[in-house]
Length: 503
Image (cartoon, rainbow, N blue to C red; front, side, top):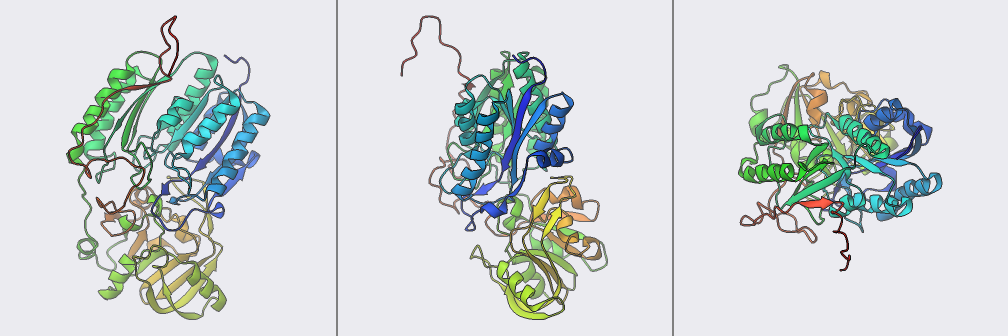
């Protein structure tokens, strides 16, 4: 128990990592903010870090800022890049000896050497700080919860909505429970059940099976500190995987609640079928001048770990001779270099896109260089509102009706500022493509009709497409698998008096 103003160390490393993406996440892909600048950013941010920092500050905590490192979803992080960031946070904890630690993490970060970075950083902090310093973290609902994470601390709180409009609320709750634990008013215990289950489609929480499951979660949460449902990031090759349901309580209601949620989720597994329309069917009914159509490119979602170099939609528009004025983001560092060498106003005969994944075809044309920028912008939100982003050097290229925002690094194009920062106003087009499956709707629905189309690529789940080495068999890939509904408790219950703890 701590009296007076608690000293809370804050920081985070945020990445959703695709094990099969050929482009690894490098150190320069992380936008790093540290020290007092971290606090300034967080106070205006729509992230879990923002919600947590605002709550802690309002509660009178003395904040010890470390590092906030955020990268777009992408390939596995280069291990050395992760270790450098982790060690800066751990070293700060060892140096300052805080009363508590608050972290903002994704939950599905992996490196070229390590599948469970969240478990790794929490374990490293626990070793440095000992068993009595509370550690809490806010997570994405598509995190991969692991026993190592829960063994280090029971205080993991996921966001509950997809699209993720409530990151800040997860941060607030994690911060509140952290301070209550520190004050001794609660003694939280987590219960967890892992289900051997993937959800191929219908992943939004505003309709369908997840809406009903979360209604049950809210009902059960009346007797709990938290209930979180982790719908797992399906492209991270780690173990355990599949869905995980957790409850947090200092009472006894949590075991029944976590089992009821897990059973309900498992019983609805057949309801999660793919429900996305084809590109052809959506474009067939859209005409120039009839309003803005915003397409989510399911197969090349940068927000799902894709590389952003997919040309499927661009090639379709060219092949069909579409007269729609289209604004499309593409990742291609070589094309940007060629445009920069030629300069604004020049025409470059180059092929664009299809350079990273290898399954896409580049699009060759005479492209006029309309603009060149540094690729830096601050996100408008509401998703990741006020978070800085960096696409790397960027070029705006035009051929016919197609305007491309070509970035050196995968762009967070779910945010209008990815386009506006380059001088292109999405509202002036008939069609805008976002490399996103859900979150673009939060910002673009005020501008036009938003539709996610069923395009091919690394981020469109197809059963059996990837070969997993660590991940256990999951439904629907293993259709006859039977779940183990055993409730696991973290920390485990104390042994009866007089019992020896032996292996």
